[in-house]
Length: 436
Image 1 (cartoon, helix red, strand yellow):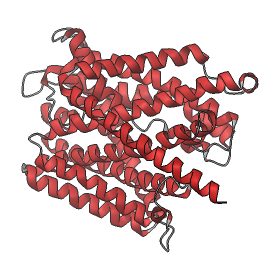
Image 2 (tube, one colour):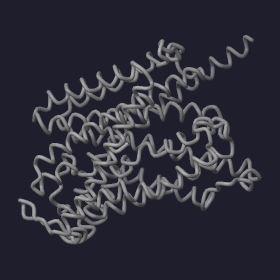
Image 3 (cartoon, helix red, strand yellow):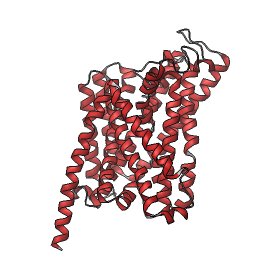
Image 4 (cartoon, one colour):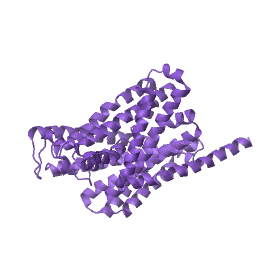
């Protein structure tokens, strides 16, 4: 999911300057170890198909319940962020916030209709959408290199140059406060990275595909995240990047390619639609899976004639519309985006942390299986504590920042709610077992 990179990196660059690259690199490194921990767990028991499975097995049913529902909410909130991105891209052309919001709702309705048709339609759409995203990033990197070599000057006077990475106030122009301010959007930019592991675990030969997929993560981070950010700040000085729109579109406009900027905006619109399409697919299947396990209402386990979980899909879409309502009543698109992405980042931090905790429990309960593992996590348990410490520090950083503090304060409401739902679920389960 690239909405955090495509739209949110402008805010991150504005806050941290070129040092935002270090933020992305640190968070990417920590998440690589989360992926390695998850990889060893999935490899040790090939019956696991998701982290909800090993959380329930290693920690207890409550952990599976919490992780399953929290991960579902992760994608609901992320989908809301994608809708805000879609609104921003429509607004680039029509310059009308209210109309852009309605067009975003229409885009969501179109995606719902396509998802209701057939599962094959989702696969076809995602193939082309993913290809467009990759081409957009690689094209930007190539363009930045060419512009830096020829030293093209923008209409505003700034020149494309590799020295933009340390000129204009230095590599960390806003100091440590600016560096830490970029953490929130950097964390959100990596949401969905864990799907690389769970998707590979569902292939016909996970013993080969899973290690291969996770081992490719560092290269993907360097190319698609670090490479893209470096390209943006090479093409134009970091202080010319505005925080209120996509830097991918801005760069082309700042260097004088106004027509190309419109084309890039269309590319990013399709990319955001792709991410929302994935979100609809993922959340509906998660709700369907929870219903099959008895952890969600039985109406969500029903399939349509073409094997689509229609009820779960429609319910997920209606919840995403809450994001449209929130956006429509918000004073600022980017203010709404900051709140929604912070909530999503916090929920994902919880999910990633629980994966690491599962690994620590696994090492304590089944040390013999770790010794026989063919895909051991580098650093083992000590590295897990490093990752958890980093996540705790990230939480403190988000709590101290005035723009993200409100999300830190309201997110615990979800955990109180899901805890109460678990007690209801457990009571019903125990009652049914007592009647047998």
